[in-house]
Length: 292
Image (cartoon, rainbow, N blue to C red; front, side, top):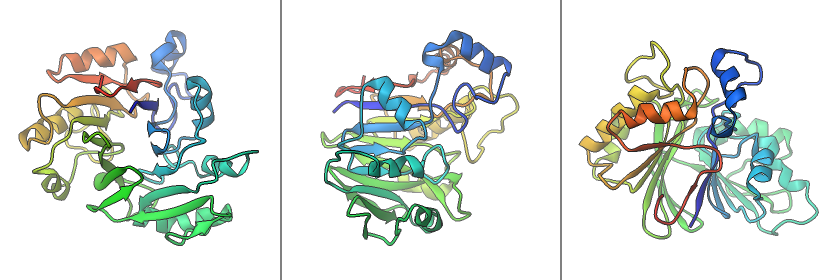
């Protein structure tokens, strides 16, 4: 199983196309791994987390398609994670795989999304097949486990609100077919105590966690909504305390924006000094069967 970071940027993309700040200007000049499309993650051809507004660009750049995609896990309803119009592009094709796309999102997200989906002619009634069987919506409860294709998926609420006031982003705790366990945590912020208690007694082999604000000046400790590098390290320290991560856990940072001062390699150097082995992910980075 080769997993791939399709995109590693936050809502505005990196660089921000409305911006000429020092960092965005440096990124345009440097190019390469500094260019970040909006965040999404491919587990394999059948399973994906989030559907970015940059999906067309990602597929072209990486030589991929989503022809075989059957199970789409949505973290929350912000537009950089849930690009409804792009998902509906399954209708604009000459040939498709003749299987429905199962879309999973939290119950509050599904409720909020119902009116939006109706604009596209999509009935959001749970489990109902829509548009000749091409889409099926699955609302998920927090702190529950589900069978999603070949994956066992548990919903862990982050401390980050989506478009609905009652919608917390889902951080997906996933048991992969080979038995390894992955936590995909974007967007998150400092977890509530209820979430920390839920993670006690569990552990992961792979951890992918957002580091939206890099080395942003003046960002508070234990902040909700998003992490910067110090809060990322605090999360790792708490996870180590409860033995959720261990010495063999592989760790990546993703969902990075431009509200800080670091290019890709500079952010990697900051993490290297932290004492934790964190890899700063970049668009197209693949995780092979050994987690490398």
